[in-house]
Image (cartoon, rainbow, N blue to C red; front, side, top):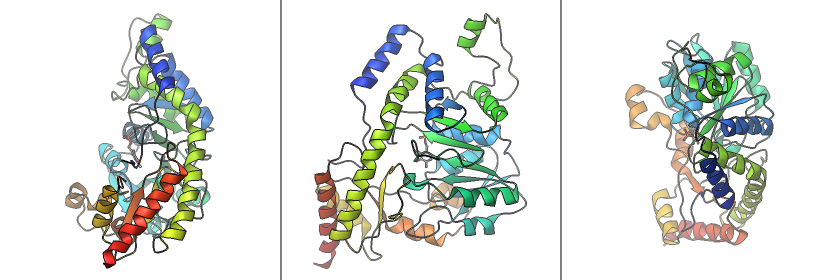
Length: 373
Ligand SMILES: *Cc1c(COP(=O)(O)O)cnc(C)c1O
């Protein structure tokens, strides 16, 4: 079965893991710190805080930057549910914003402007499929209104400019992302004070960690804020360090495969639309396409599955999930709903070969045609 995504872990990661086991210090030690430094450097950021997930990173960013009850946060609905959940964790209210269009499924500035109120405190951009939002336009939007500008950069590891839009960014190292630590995430932020608070909040709000106390001979610690257990461990950091070294190469391979897809789709499936087709500043995290309006997506997916090809959907819109519908029943986002109704995600990962891209497009063309028989 050709899968939509596949983690690439092998002998480098095994070696890194056994080094940790041999050294005996298994959580929140020098490797976590080394990973933070390396990741920050790769993304042109002054520093970073590694945590247990991207969801934790988003939560800490909001709380660390002072977003809380009474505040509204603009979020896309065409995203993984965590982007909205973290706003609720902080006690604030997510306000769902539509996408620009079927060809540009990134958050719409125009709709965001319409949804601003006196309570709006922050906006969380999500770089869908790894394609960066328009930095200058969003910077201007946020500055004009005094809003925090945050990035859910879960799709965008390794892209020049990702994490550098505004006040803070969260990345994910979940198993299906461009680089993985199995589970994990990281925060990048501009403001050093905010980053210090986030670092402290990651470990229960304690003023020092176990390794710091060992090194400084401090006898005890204090807790000066409400913290969480969002720590990353040494095993994950060791995998992260190994993966980070390969990220650029993998992203280049994804880009080459994406270009092959665009050519093959144009030739074999002219009725299919390829969003963001003219854009290249991307991690090429996934390969989303938009099916013709009358295509039956369910049967297309089933037929492709019969050909041993997995396809998925990015995403069921957050505002249409039962939980969010029950909270905010009146939200309607025309473009998001149409995109999500027709979107199909094709397999894309660095282990794929050109022949597989051709095979996927052939299977897709075949399953789209079958409808007419
Ligand atoms: C994967 C993902 C997340 C959540 O990441 P975790 O590390 O699993 O918490 C959040 N937002 C988006 C857009 C994602 O793709």
